[in-house]
Length: 297
Image (cartoon, rainbow, N blue to C red):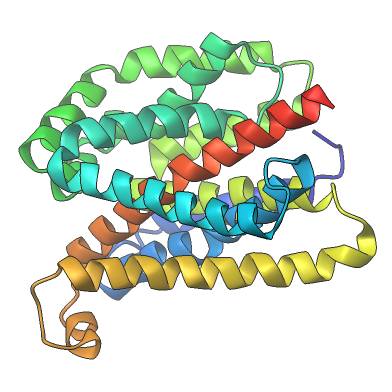
């Protein structure tokens, strides 16, 4: 990780604001504010995956126009399959989402062994259940019903173990101060800010900006503005696709406007996290294939 990572400063500022707001008991996770947090995760967090097509082309995974079209078809099919699995087996899919997200997110801190990387990512995603047992149980219940509630209770019981995992990761990163500071502050956020606020701050101000910056660093400087626009376009398209899928499976209203008007916070939360899970799987697949092709060159 470079010494001048701009996302580090952005994250530390956002984390300070989140901790101060939580300490001041500002209602940052109630009503409209909750919907705003969910929307931020959806819109600000998505653009770094918007360069998957370009990365696939750059690495040689996609070689021509036909392959590019097939790439998009397979990407959407993979996302749709994950969404259907969530609707069919919500608890198992939620567990799988936590595991693959743990591996993906912990990649923000190179230098961890594969085992410690997975443990660290899982600890970060699960640690809020220790200090925020009731909100996490409520969120998981919305996402996966009774099975989600049981999963949240299990994570709450494992809280001390997750704290130990993070402690080991911090020791491992002691020679990279910036990484250690990021992970340390993120651990504090996981413990002392509401779960959705914690996730929104991390995803929108650290993970997504970092992944976008690293992807853009692979391109020539003159090409970067067009790639940023491309990432934004794909983010909007992805958000619209998730909304369209939600409308197609929803029962409220005869029109999209009526459906959106009746969409409450729980429905929005479920829609966003199913959408994130659906997009994360093909996104990770592209990242893995692109890295493998690059190593072969």
